[in-house]
Image (cartoon, rainbow, N blue to C red; front, side, top):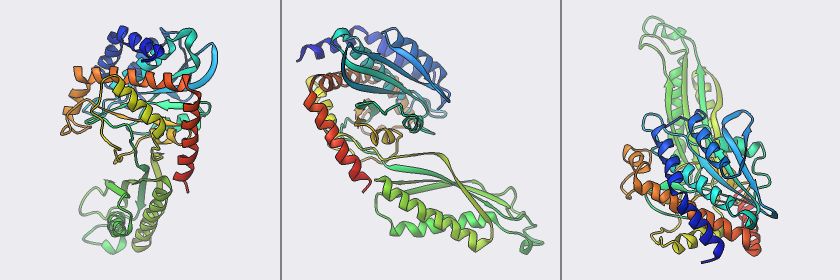
Length: 393
């Protein structure tokens, strides 16, 4: 094993207690998206102890950018920390472990001292479960000069070649006219009928869509009493597909269904994005293979083949502007589903914390490869140029 890799592994073993502390403290104090004040404060304080300059990010009070420059020019490598929890079931997605792993990896690369080329960054990324702050961080230019972005997500199996679906979050509001449902229904305009027609239109649309397209929604408002014609009805939908280009096509078809319901009922339609949209994740396979090799060098071999994404993440937006990896590391058995009580327990377990430490080591070792091998970085960037352009053709 190369000397620099031995050095980052030794460093991470020496701060194992701190990595576990970050995982434990965030797990014990779950905070919802954009309200992760304790988690953000903890991470800022911890990383600043290792010589990182920590800056706030305007309009995102729980986000942060911590950076440490080397004494020689080289690539800028970013480790991304997530730390928001889910309502009621806490860290059932294991974001406490993402924060711990990325903190450890950043601290380890920063500890290279004179041997550090370029710059290492720890980026605090709030609200992945809801409004996806990485979308805003991309728009703010935080990743403009980054050469590689990395994070590891807990799962029920380990996979390095992961993808995710592009997604738009649409809210449709219909405004009708209230009337007595028995005495004067002809005087009303039924907004709920419009929402029901919207659902029926989408159900008919599904037959004409590719298998990777997903549309799922709920009615958030549908009237207040059975004897009143509803004058307001609201529905929310997620529209997803494997690639952003096709997802946007499906989005327009869904909007057409909504407009058809407006015409059919006379209820006035308005619509908006109730959350930020996510791009599809484009994993840089060159970088993922390096991460995989480092996992194996650490003695971990239970790695699955490419994992087709069935959900969406704002890491997709990052992957569209900088070469990125988003591997999964197993913290629970395959029968344990993320976003469950059992997965929350796994995220607070010794197995979960050991997985975070393993992830930190593999991330740091991958960063060492990128820092020390010019040809590897060129290959990573060449693949990025080809795959990102292809995803929008």
